[in-house]
Image (tube, rainbow, N blue to C red; front, side, top):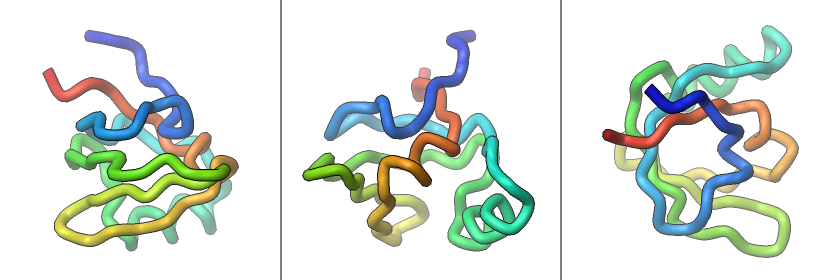
Length: 77
């Protein structure tokens, strides 16, 4: 199994799954409420000017690189 990498390092168009969240409790709770839970698939639909647009469970979210760096992901294999 590939080691997890930060979501901020994933290129546009890549499909991945959530491996974990490395953030404060309040941010982790907020991300989990948005659907960023372990093994949930997501796709980076846009990487533009310091922010990512990701699609997870049919919803699109814009995340800054700082927040995206706290979400750990793995390839979909």
